[in-house]
Structures are given as structure tokens and as C-alpha cells.
Image (tube, rainbow, N blue to C red; front, side, top):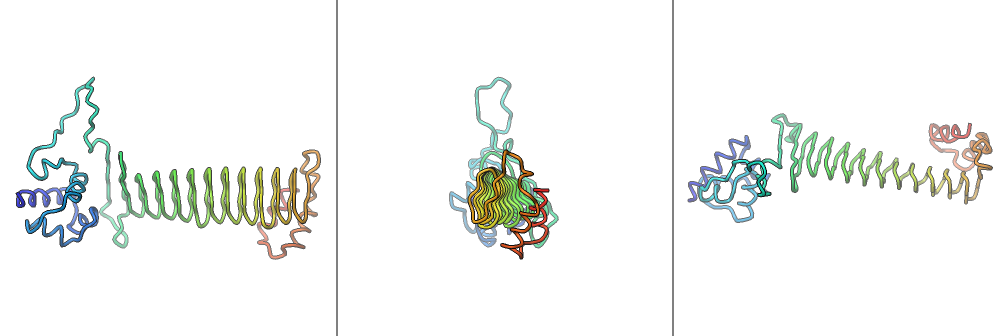
Amino acid sequence: MNMDFAEKLQNYRKQKGMSQENLAEAIGVSRQAVSKWESGQSYPETDKLIALCELFHVSMDHLVRGVLLEQQELPLGSNDRTTPRDRTHYEYKSKTTWFGVPLIHINVGRGIYVAKGIIAIGNIAIGAVSLGLIALGGLSLGVLAAGLISLGALSLALLLAMGALAAGFVAAGGAAIGVLAFGGLSIGVYAFGGLAIASRIAIGGYASGHIAIGDAVRGAYALAIQNDDIASIHAEQVKALITQEYPKTWKPLSDWIVALFR
């Protein structure tokens, strides 16, 4: 049985275009372990057998005892809800690599599938550009996204985060936390939104900050908009306050804030 299994394992690995090292990495063992399996010197443990069956889309019976996996499609109207695994899973890994990482890796399906590549698309995606339910990388798009630039329902980023809940250097969303924060609820060094809370400058419907500008304001320097008319706040007054309190403010940012009231 060991030799029969060994031959099948080697055939399936080659059909999938994987080296022993690739296979070992995919199921979490050493290359030497795979080599011993294929030479019949040892036999994988049950959890590794299950991982091999999932990777090659075959049944345990077929891989171990030679019983073929039923592949025929269900007839129309059948009440059997069983779906072959290979119909709910798709994987593509480009042969082109960069520093050993595939240029493109797509790994999606029903279950937990991880894609790792320069461009990664998967249930869980990790890459320079990643798209998935959970996305991690340079540019990340997903329900949960984390990276340098992230867009998602829950978004975390070092540079720019956009989402229902966003946190990053620049954050924009329903609730945003960042150095520059824009949102319904915004919290930051500079905050802009319906409810804006800032350590320096806050602008919003309700604004709380050292310099606070809005309909309802609280701060050391509070400028309240009169009669819903933003023109009641003068640009030169805002500019003078920023120059007085924060003279080292990044000029493009201070110019943009002042321009809001011109």
C-alpha cells in the first residue's frame, strides 16, 4: 500500500506542477518528509493525508485504497446537495516568480483558502496587491483590509485607510481614526466630519479641538458658524489662528483648511 500511495502522490504532485518543496510548503511539512513519502520510506499522518486530499481534490479512499472518487455531475432535479470540492474551488499560481513569490496567485472557494503572491486574490489574500475577504498587503481591498493603502469594511493602513471603520495616517469612513481623519465620526490630530474630535484642529457639525470650527464647538479657540452660513467664518481669521497656534503646520494642509472658508 505504501508504494501504491507513493506512486499516486508523485503523479498528483507532478500533474499539479509542484516540486517536492512546493508540496511540503503547501501542507506544512519538510521537503525531506515528502521525499520519504514518495519513496515509500514513511507514511503521512492522518491530518497530512486530509491536507493532501484537499490539495489534489481526491477522496481519502482513492488516495490510500484506490477507490475512485465519484466525479459524475448530479442529474437535474436531484435532491442530493453534495457538491464535488473541485466545483467550489479554483486555484491558479503563475510560474513567473519574484524572489520566490508567484507573480499572481488566485486561490478562492468555499472554505479557507490562502493566496500569497505579488498579486494575490483569495479568501485570505497576502500580497503587494491583495483582494479577498481578508486582505493583507501593500494595496489591500477586502471586508477586512490591512496594509499600506487599505479599502474595506474594516480598514487599517499605515498610509491611507478607507472604509466603514478606518484607521490610518489618513483615514476616511463612517468612523475614522488617524492623523488626518474624515468621517461621520472622526478622531485625529486634524479631524473633519459630523462629529470631529481633534488634538489640534477640528471642523464639523460638532467640533472639539484646540481650534474648533463648526455649528457646535468646544475648544481653546472656538469659531461657531452663525445661521448655518459658513461665510460667517472668515478665511483670514482661520489662517491667523493656524499661524499663531501651529506655525509649523504643513503648508498644503493649512492652505486647504483656509480655502474651505473662502
